[in-house]
Length: 253
Image (cartoon, rainbow, N blue to C red):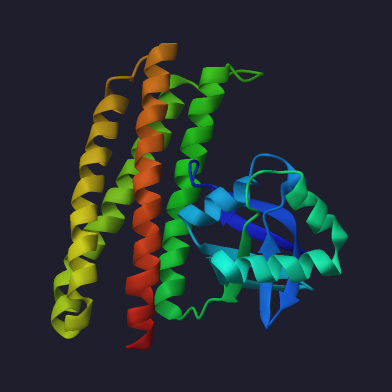
C-alpha cells in the first residue's frame, strides 16, 4: 500500500512530496525508511526528524500528521511483522547496515490557531524557498538568463520584511497572552528569545543583501546563500516549536 508523504526540507524549508509504502499495524499507520535497502536513509526521514509535522494523502484523503519514530524492541517487533507480511522488507534490512526506521503517522488535532500559524509559516517557507531558488539560479547562470542582482535584492528584502513584520506582530501579542494564559509563559519566553536570535540573523542578511546591490561575484552570492540557509535552519526549529506548543495551547483555550 502506498501514500503520499509531504515533509518540509530540513535544509531548504521547501515542501517535498514522496510516495512511500505504508502498513496498518496495531491501529497505527506506519511508514518504513527502507530506501530499498540502500546504505543511505531516504531524505524524507531526515526532513521529518527536523520537523515532525507532515502531510499525508491516502485514499483520496489529505490530513496533517505528527511523525513519531519508533525505536528499540517495539521498532524491531513492528518491522518483523512487516517483513513477514512482505518478504522484500526482510531483504531490505539484510542489504544494509543501518537500522531501517519505522515511523508512525498520527493525525494531528489542528484547531484554528494552529492552522493559522501553519498557514503563515508555510507562506514564509515558500517565500524563502523562492529566494533560495533565485540565488541558486544566479549561481548556476540558469538559462536563458540568470536572475539579475536587482531581482535577488528584491526577493531577499521582501522576505526579510515579511519575517520582521510577522515576528513584530507576535511580539506585540505575547505579553497579553502571557497574562491571559500563565501556563504559556515558558513557551512564550522561549519564542521571544528565538525572535531576538532570528532578528539578528535577519539583520545580518539585510546588510549582506544591501552590499550586493550591484552584480555580486560568485563568492558573494555563495556567501548570501550561506546566510539564507543558516536563517532557514533557525526558522524551521522555531516554526516547529511554535506550532507544537503555542498553537495547540491556544486551540485548547
